[in-house]
Length: 398
Image (tube, rainbow, N blue to C red; front, side, top):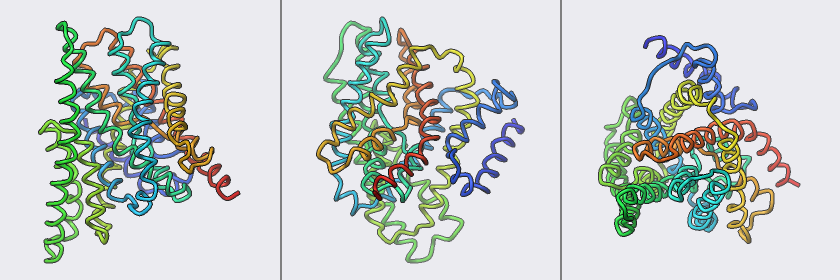
């Protein structure tokens, strides 16, 4: 156990010592974490052979995503977002359903013998974009602010919206095995997930923001305690929403947005420390993904699995985005850029673990497809981020 901890801790330490230098290279953070994970796993050095159960890994991924969503949302430039609110609205309300529908159609063509609910579950699990993987784009000042804020809001809310959609299809599958599909229950579950998620995020963040101001005015918050305030707030939003039956991801993102609005003169140190903790959790998640998950399943990737994964990252994502951005004020380069940078990551991993208990007829193929898509997304989006940003910048300047 200690050698595993030493490997993780030393890598996190070394990476952060040279992070600014590394981020200027062609390899971004998540891609480097994946490479390191695969290198120390069974495929190569075989010095990191831990066994981690599904629930523990899902919790790690959930907490990392919850913290990233909250901190990213709190840093949202509301003035820019208000000017371009139609774009993320279109992406979420029109583009997301079309993406799920495209994912379903592609599944019908590629996978033979799959039931419609199985394909709907697969398409939904791979529909949300990842805020952590897209951070290098969403925080890069070279990217036009309207694109950054739109992609940030989209990635912050689409995974939360997809949770009740996925649960709806899961409920349909469970009820179909007993001979009937309870649509009323499924729709009620969908509304509950969204409603409770928003309610918890707003109420908890409003109360805690007032308490933060009250304590800060009396200088009750010192340096050592600043590190855990946003951490505690985001995790409270997530866990309480989940416990009440809502979406913890929606709670975190809406809570983060409200925190940013209520704290226009917020203590940047609170957010920066929380972002650092979120980055650390994300690093560990991707290292374990490379060493444990990818190393175990990469040899099982079939032609059909790889083909669906590639289409999911391109046609399934980019065509709906290009369609909904029609007459949005985005030029062709900006539409293509926005469509391409829809990486799949933590949310899809969480969804993959969620469906394990369903005992789907083609469960293994579905899991392999999700894993393969996330794996390819980390690689392809990782190596194209910087060159595509440079190309877009040149287009904008010309």
